[in-house]
Image 1 (tube, rainbow, N blue to C red):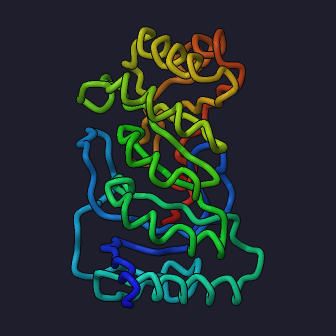
Image 2 (image 1 turned 135 degrees about the vertical axis):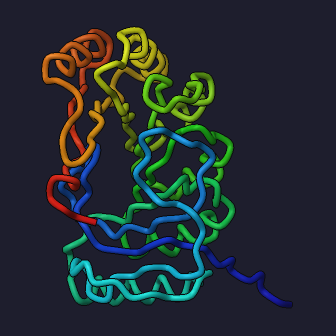
Length: 251
């Protein structure tokens, strides 16, 4: 009887760096960036198009990149993780599964995550719009970083109902919500986001991430404090955390 083949993945890059966003900011992670996204946010600064080659750091943390042909097998990635963990024991906090939108590869992740999780805990970065796909893999996740995509910043309609369904599932793990905000983000969006999170649990942290362009935060301190105060009326843990990796020049 033949065992089913483990699927291969088209990855954009694999690298070792410091998490620059959200609750795990400052933790060193191994990043696995998957191709593809179901949204087209105006502020997106990530290239998530499928390519023939995956960029892989030759030495973890060096910023020097080699390439491997896509798609990659789970065995190739597992070998790399084992090598980096042997070379730098205890240096990495977790694996960040990121994109694009990695849950577009939910069936593949269902196959890969049990093995990856043996190497390090799993942190998922997601736009929070694919609840059914999250449900497939939630048992293999340790943290979920979920965006609520605000119309004022993305230019797309905010999928409030999908975000709520998604958060109800994500709350089975250590999860938090991230809001990318600009100077023009209205109070109403802050209130709606706080209301949504509170319907699931008021103990889920919210991170306000000000839009950054050319290495500069594009939101005034005064406006950020106003937005923080609106959310704090319902959610006790609300933090303002910019994209710190942009200031540090990290991958």
